[in-house]
Picture 1 (cartoon, rainbow over the protein chains, first blue to last red):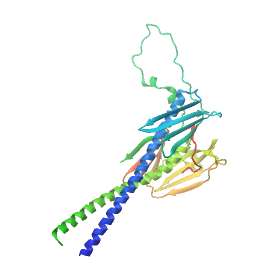
Picture 2 (cartoon, chains in turn brown, red):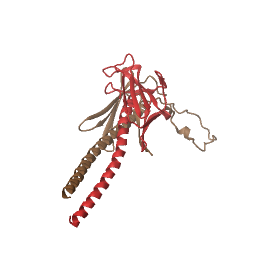
Picture 3 (cartoon, chains in turn cyan, yellow):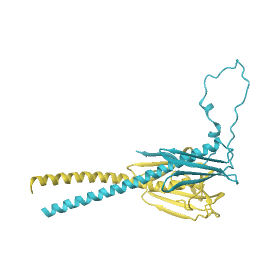
Picture 4 (cartoon, chains in turn purple, red):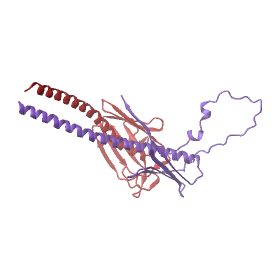
Length: 160
Length: 162
């Protein structure tokens, strides 16, 4: 009886050790996954910021900016090339490794120019609009922009 | 056997059995998630390289089970060839996912095709400028969406798309 019990306890102990080691490995793997996803989201955010910066400063030949997201340093470099295309590099500043992506933006499809607001004479008796519709607030150059990219949507959904 | 020993052994066995059944439950759940994660890596890499979605190509038609993505062709030096595209076809059929690259004549990519088994039900969606996929194994279902817009190309780190 004692031998059987000894074997049973040995089995239980070894099994629990295996589960413990597997748990650590699974945790490390999940941690890698989370880090990778975080990198993806930060790079995607940097790309979006770069594109917005380009739209806002369309005449500048080069834009460079650094920022911090959730305590992680990131940035982008945007340069106009001689070929007319735009080179964009988004990166994360990490101590051990360089994490970056490079994009080429095709400017063959021109962005719609921002229309200057029409200057009209307003008479004192002109009626003031009571409400401003939501469509009036939309900036048409953003809505109609053929803008860039493949941007991963930062949603990760678990559907039941 | 003495009574304390019996009590100790009983408690140890019950506790161990409970913990290990808990482990089994988590293992099953995490294996589903790892499967999704593996699929996501392949599909996400292709979606990031993609510059558009094709409605039909070489006898394939875009549907919930077939995704046809356009990839900008590039040379061996990773220089993107303007106006030339390769095609990536991802086809889901009965727990099997088939990945295929159909290169252009001028690009440096080679034709490659491989499949993954036991993927569960995979279906693609294309709503509102998004390309997404959902992977379900019966117990749970995971989904991921990507924007694919034209005019901006990711310079590929290498020639492989998957």
